[in-house]
Image (tube, rainbow, N blue to C red; front, top):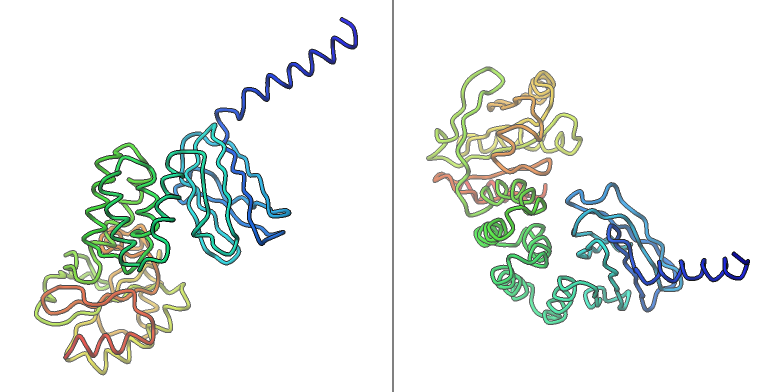
Length: 336
């Protein structure tokens, strides 16, 4: 074969590769941002579809991101201002993003039906009150529960929004599970969120029985008839130690009107015992050494530390996820 024929064959091979497009096991995201020249953002998956976090560099307002992907997944784009955006990535697809860096909510994303549906939803909801947007998101999820776009909207408006109504969120989550029974992102989200939603403000605290550090069985139902404060903490968390000091003082002030119960997320039961003695806690302390994997912690939907749950005399949760400066007012309101 002559040199010319070798060159022709090589060019033909290159053209054949180009005509095949993106490999079926890879996804490409191409973006063009107005009013920004250079910057970085991060890409990761909350559901474990990709390992770790990738850094994407924007040069002259443009970027290209490509990586291997086994199955369709929801990727999270984390921007320098800490705002997030979800993109539905599908193997073999090229996804295009275009918009103004200062108005990410108006970003146009195309390349798959789910991304185009999400773009249309965002644009239709621009400048509407948050409550109206959540109502629209709920309606979309109910009517399109089998679409991955519905999962994205649930993540954005219900899974991460503490203002979302727990009953509505549970109903929507149930709809997604029925429509997408094999979707691991939905089942894992349901496993994590359901206990938290079932133990949110306005709902009855999930009943439980557990042994305290002295081996005595504590039955949550025995606290009915009097307000109850349940505090979740761990000795390894410095913020919790500040809360323990506050709780000790509040128990002295309000202990005749309210019951107190502590749940330690220490992995070492003796560490929890030492901390309870150091802080001279008078109320029962529950600790099984399971930390966040504890059945009790999972049953009550604990995701962050410190956490406090205030329950009224009927067993209804009246406050949760309080800030430090909100704690005393919430206690005084509960004991009135």
